[in-house]
Amino acid sequence: MFEIEKLNEANKQRIIDFLKSDVIGHVFAFYDIQHDPQHTTMYAAFENGNLKGYILIYTATDVPSIILECKEYVAEALIEYAPRDNFIIHAPPNLLPSVQRKFPNEKHYVENWMLIRGRKAHYHRSELARRLSTEDDALRLAELLSNRKDRPARALKKYIEWITKMPVYGLFTNGRLVSYAGSFLQLPQVWMMGGVFTQPRDRNKGYATLAVSAITEEALRKAETAALFVRSDNYSAIRVYEKIGYEKIGEKLWVDIGTGLRP
Image 1 (tube, rainbow, N blue to C red):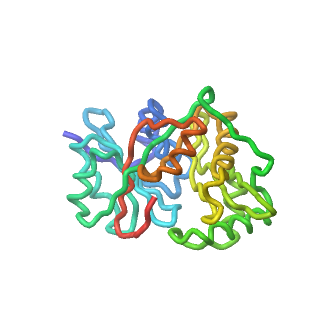
Image 2: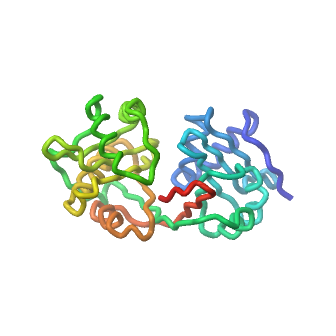
């Protein structure tokens, strides 16, 4: 019989030691409970002293982000600790039936989980791509992302904070920022890529390849691997990542519970 414990100082190291056995597979939990504990709550299922899974609630994002990783037989008990509505669950595909029983009105999307190691990388370099660092760069990023209607608008201060705290690369043409890619999580084992976006009228020109290549090159100078998630039906983006050397290593689900957001 399993027991569920809330993450605390007494069990924290035991949980970290388990996550350490597969940092890439548990990258968000491994990072959040150590580097952002004020926004992180975790409930872990133990059986005979062994960790059988966890649910992690992370609240520093626009809506709560829930990570569910566990054996199927503990899934429904862990899901009881999720919020009531308006959040995103990230989970392996085999846990979808358990999620649907709790949240029958969910909407889910399959994401490819892709990884690259240094020896597999094929960099596409350009002088037009560089790391964003100034307030003017932040303003250009805000202007670019104002074209992304599927995400909430943010104040300039937020973009300044992004490029100060996180590696973000942009592709500029004629003084305009037309594409960007960043890394929102950095560990020695893996950097997680995200936020790739290109101005709609500037797509299919190779700009995303250059921006993603630039951030990937920095990642693989400083970490063993780089990884990302991409919706499985976003074929143009998948081609960009494959061109650089990313390979699919699995699938995850993005499950929308009441937010209307999509990956």
